[in-house]
Length: 203
Image (cartoon, rainbow, N blue to C red; front, side, top):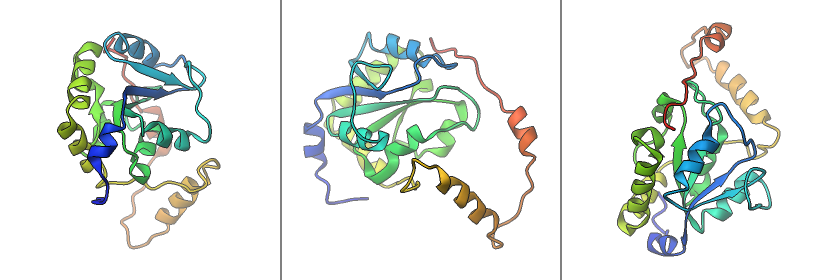
């Protein structure tokens, strides 16, 4: 954890509630519909092809810049499938970005993320209940900064040249060739065909 951070100062600079960066507007998860309902109870600024605002630079640079002004960032998957977790979540754990992710994904999403570092949509019965909780956390410096401090204990490793996506392939080869790790044969075709996606039920 970075003890040199002035969390009180970080909190005081955040004058907006929620940001969402999105380029794929209509998805199987119907995330746009959820955000529309959520926006009735808390302010959400939408960036990208599906929003009103633009953000220069790479997606990561954009998130880093927005994190200075916003308290929360939506990390909503376009499909709610088991084991489906995209870079949109892990970007928020890179370089200790000072923002709290609001995650909407598959039920087992939480297995891959550290406790008390994010807000999980499925913990709430409705968008209204979620908005209420976000306002409580966002309106309380102690609650908010404690989550940031906890989040700063973790970091996500990713490709410095992430635009190519080649790092993931190389990393997979590296792991497969490490003899000191136990070997396991996986039927990828069976795993892919059996991957379960849930029907949206939180709207």
